[in-house]
Every structure is written in C-alpha cells, then in structure tokens.
Length: 250
Ligand code: G3P
Ligand code: MG
Image 1 (cartoon, helix red, strand yellow):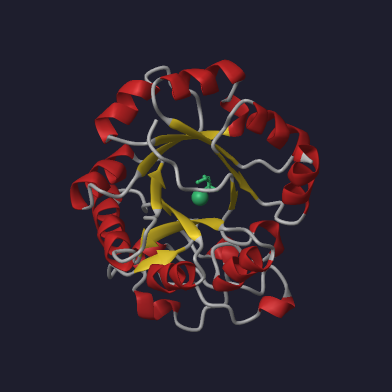
Image 2: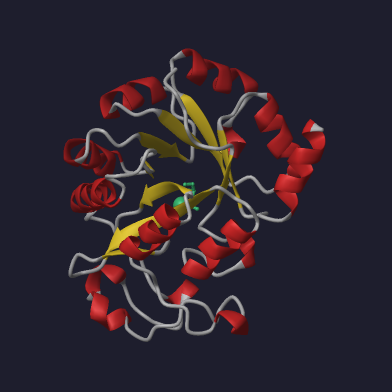
C-alpha cells in the first residue's frame, strides 16, 4: 500500500455536531479541538462558483431558499448559514471552496474534499473542484484527498488533476468495489461504517487500498473499526470521540 499521510480522525463537515456544518466556524472548532483533518462537501452554484455545502438546496442549513443549481453565487449574499445551529453563529455565510482551502492550508489541516455535485452536474463539478484543489494546494506537501459517491465526478477529477488522490464513497456494499477503484485509479474506499466487517477491511487492504468509515459517533464502534485496521474515521463527536480513543490506547 502507498504511503498514507492522513490522520485517523476527520472532523465531519468541519465542526461535526458543535457548529453549523460546512462553515468556517466549524473548521475553527475542529482546529480548536486539535483535529488535524476535516471533511467538507463542495458543489457548484449555477454560475460555477465552488461552494461548501452538503444539500442541493438551501433550506435545511440556512435561512435561504432554493436549489443551488439554479442560484448564482451573488444570490447567496447575506444568507445566514449559522443561525439554525445557534444564535452565536448568526451571520455565518455559505463559504466558498477557496475560503475553506485557504483556512486548511494556513492552519496546516489535512483536507478531505468531498465532491457533492448537484444532480446532472457530476462531470463539470468533478473537473472544476479537482482543478481548483490542485491549484490551491500546489505548494503544499500533502494534497487534499478527493472523494465522491459519484464515479462520473471522480473520473472527471482524475482527468483534470491526475495526481490528486481519490477515494470512492459507498453507502451500500458493492461486490465489485475492486473493479470500481481500479477504474478510478483510486487510493481508498470510504464506506458507511455499517457495511464494514473485519473481513471486508482485510480484503480491501489486501487489494492495496485504504479504508475509511463514516459517520462514526459511537465510541465502541470507533474502537472496533480501529482494531480492524480502518485507516480513517469521520466523526461528528469532536469532543468525546478523540478522548475515548486516546484513553483506550493508553
Ligand atoms: O465523506 C464522508 C461523509 O461525509 C459522506 O456522507 O452525506 O455526510 O456527505 P455525507
Ligand atoms: Mg460529506
């Protein structure tokens, strides 16, 4: 297996459950709690600005409305993506990918950039996010790890920035994971933790790939996955999980 520069724990959507997801305050929370890696989701606005947000629509995580595939970036101006999580986050904007990339680079945080295209925009999103990532991190020692549930997006990312490592996300188990990873020239399989078993982790490793698991918030499950040799966990439990795992390894 190739050298793997990333730490075991990734703060999921930036701040896990402590801050509005996919925002700068979330990334700052992860940093303050001594996380050295963050995962976040990137998609394109209608006018092709890369922004950091999970859903295809604004409603759940902001006071805005509408589908991102139909909104230009300037229409996000003034939208509050923080208040839903708490008054202390009022006024937090939907960040641009470039803002979060700058933060990660300045603070020396490892990044997992999940390419999360709006439906029908898989290819262009994969291409653009990979090109931007290659540019932002061009002087850095460790590249961001790109990932996606969309194999179309990952193929476009491969073409646009072949040197950036890629991971395939799967929610349900697929028997042909090896064929898929080979086709993408990927380095890792990022699995819903519920579909992982010790045997599957061993099989993925034996084929030369890393295994990451999302979203792991239960301490005992996290320890079990680590005992099986899982290479990375995405967690929302930024306070309790690292402490529990550290205690277990004492
Ligand atoms: O990349 C791991 C995880 O974030 C995938 O699921 O829905 O939280 O983006 P989701
Ligand atoms: Mg994600």
